[in-house]
Length: 237
Image (cartoon, rainbow, N blue to C red; front, side, top):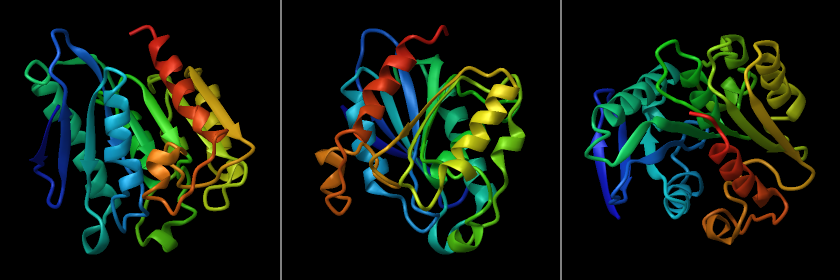
């Protein structure tokens, strides 16, 4: 695997490319980490990218403006630029752009959902882990966002979502339930798993991510990952 970082036009933004050499073009996933715009969480980024790479995906991590440079609209532009770059360089990256999706966690889930709903989106599938959907914690994060459920249309890509009923930061009723209702209303294919255990910010929920996440793991909630893989593989691209 060759790992490199490519700067984007949007200031303070770049994309980490985890390139696996392959005789055939592989599906890809752009990972959008969480961190409340105050950091790019390791638990949601390189460890998820490497794990997905072992499942024959080309993987990428978007690094968007955070801390003193944080800005929701700038982050959205960075994500769009990342997709544009990957599609333009798909051949050299051994990437199938018709099987390129986005996977976002927490605040990164809000960005992933927002990008997936753009008319010119290049995302063919979407994964949202305990995402922020409505702008209910903007003050806490120090940004001005939007209700991404209001962006959903019939053209929104198929979406896989998961969270925990024990999540106190993005409670189910305020976020995932709202987005699921919008997808259902627009007749967008989706799958939703709301686990009885776990919590917010738990990433893969296994030992690999827990060692950089205050030893937070949950064997039951960790089942989101094989479920996500099964869901992606059954999509009709």
